[in-house]
Length: 207
Image 1 (spheres, rainbow, N blue to C red):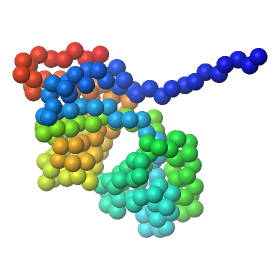
Image 2 (image 1 turned 135 degrees about the horizontal axis):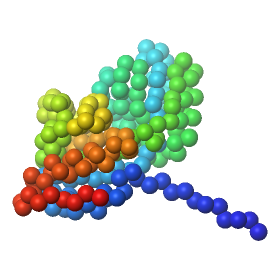
Image 3 (image 1 turned 180 degrees about the horizontal axis):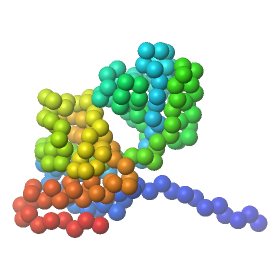
Image 4 (image 1 turned 90 degrees about the vertical axis):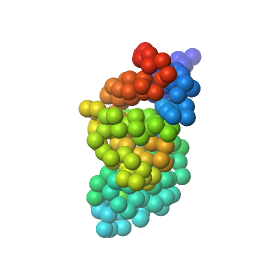
């Protein structure tokens, strides 16, 4: 009789914060809503933007790659973020990491490029609400006003002392991508800063 095989289930690195963030959001909405982003497949793409690589990858991912650094475009099940002159981060909520990497790498390799699976490298946190940019500005040196950091922009920066990738989806809708090893630090900082928006100013207890 065959032994049953174990099933591994992916767990969000910030799962222990889910209830806390839900309670915080219920209390502070519409000024602030903090939510965990879903798990996604992600690849780091390196390819010459002047060659045919970007067009080949676009055929595979089903959407356009952003033309300018520090901007992003939507893909059918994710997003494409241009991190540098020849570097993009591509995500998909529908693909398996190994399938996503293989498909993108095969398209890029034909034009001298490559793609590497980085699905475990970042986790996502959404900061929404009328005070979202004000909250993030407490620990970020970037000018986060909508006219300076509008929807469609992204930037690698520091939030507190943590390296993050900020993605602007709207005036009141921002995504924070951060390494799992320091994600809890980032959430603790944001939760602490959000205390001032409470009517009683009593801090939340973090996990």
